[in-house]
Amino acid sequence: MQIVDTHCHLDEESFSQELDDVVAASVENGVVAMVTIGTSVESSRRAIELAERFPGVVFAAVGIHPNYTAAAKPGDWEIIEELAQDPRVVAVGETGLDRYWDYAPIELQQDYFDRHLKLSEQTAKPFIVHCRDADEETRTQLRATAESGQKLNGVMHSFCQSAESAAELLQLGMFMSFTGMLTFKRNQELRDLAASLPADRLFVETDAPYLAPMPNRGKRNEPAFTRFTLECLAECHGVAPEEMARQTTANACGFFEIELSDR
Ligand SMILES: [Zn+2]
Image (cartoon, rainbow, N blue to C red; front, side, top):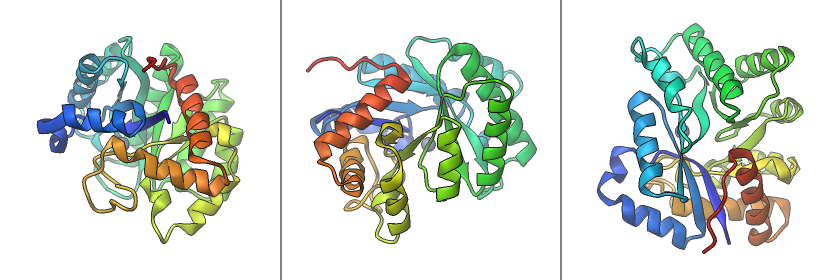
C-alpha cells in the first residue's frame, strides 16, 4: 500500500530527537510521502530543511497559520513569498480562519488568508485551509475568490464541517482531507458524511503530532498512523484499504504534483 500523509508538522519539538525513526516507521507503514506544514516563517524554513533531508519522501508547505498572524513580524510575509518559490515547496499554507482560539483578530486572519490565496495563484501551487469554528466566513472568502475569477486549487485540512458546507466546497473545486478525527467513536456523523463524498476529492492526513487516530488516540501522533484513518475511510466507502490508498494517493500526487519514487 502507498499512502500520502498530506498534513503533518514534523518540525515540532516532540519529533526532534528521533525524526529518522519516525520517517522510517512511516515508510514501513506504507506512508511513502508526507507533507510537512509551515505555520510561521521559522517553521516554514524548517519544513524546507526537512524536505532537503528526506528527499522524495518529505515535501514542504510554507505559510503563516491563522493563529500566528498576529505574531508575524514586518517582512515575514515577504519571506514566505520568497520561500514559496523553492522547488521543494509543494503548497502554500496552512492558512484559513480560526474563531476557536483568540490569538489574532479575524480581520487580520482574513487579510493573511487572502495573501495566501493570491500567492497560490501566483506560484500555481495549491493552498491548504485550516478552518475552526469559522465555516461561514471561510466559505464566504473562498466563494469571493472564486467569483473574482481565480480557479480554486485547495484542500480543507482536517475536514469536519457540515454536509451543506461540503456540498458548497466541492462545488468550488476544493478537496477534503480527513484526520484521525474520522476514527473517533463519537464522530459517526462525520463518517456518514465522508461516505457520501466523491472518492476522487479526498485525502488522508495525520496533523501529527496532534489528533492521533484510534487506537492510538491521546498518544503523540506520527505519519505512520495515517493508515488507521485510511482504513476507516475505506470502510466508510465500502472498499478495500488498498483501493482507498490507490485513490487518495493518486489524488494527493496530482494535487501536490508529487512523484513517488519507486521502491
Ligand atoms: Zn496543521
